[in-house]
Amino acid sequence: MSDPYPDVVARFYDAVYARVRDGVDNDYYLGKMAGASGPVLEVGVGTGRLFCEARRRGTDVWGIDLSPAMIERLRSKLPPEDHARVWVDEAVTMRTDRRFTLALAPFRVLSHVPAVEDQIRLLDNLHDHLLPGGTLIFDLYVPSLRLLLDGLDEHLDFDGEHAPGQRLRRYLTARSDLVRQVTSARMTFVWDEAGEEKRADWEFEMRFFFRWEIEHLVARSKMCLVAMHGDFAEGPLDESSREFVVVCRRDG
Image (cartoon, rainbow, N blue to C red; front, side, top):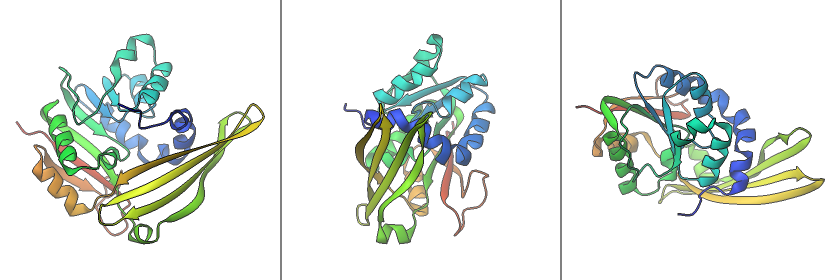
């Protein structure tokens, strides 16, 4: 299995998302982990944006990610006794004897699963790894119809440092296929290193979803839909919402 995240993405992930994502969902997911009555599974654990703080707070959390580069960077932050808590695996097919009271798939995990059959398999597999009454929470972005139609010309979406005095910029371009419901994106990283300017591109696709599609998707799986919120304060889903925050449960 090839690594879906090239090393440049894993290398700069923390620098970028500490600014552009932490203030959006951290408190929500960390609060859910802290309130869990048993073990927690984080799907798409990445470099530990949530995981490391959850462990610091004493949460019994475990994590999987498709990317060996991400898991390697995460393990470098953890004490040796915690290395086995994270491993390279795929939520669609993973198998572990552990069972969890809470499973989380933060930051658009399902958008990286393009086929409907695999989306259902993912939900069913997480269902089977939950204890009876266990909860699954995942989020997806609410598509902007204007951006879907017009696309996004290359623009600077991050300008900061990856190390003290070392500048990092990230440029983003996107175009959407309305029939396939897929957005093709390109991220260009430009950074200072050893007195030189370096550059690398990453191209990838993400599935976008609409409200009723999500409801029907969950209905076709083993999971039961509990709620769909419009933000991480669990506010209502309305025309101003930018997030689908989906809460499901395993019954029985």
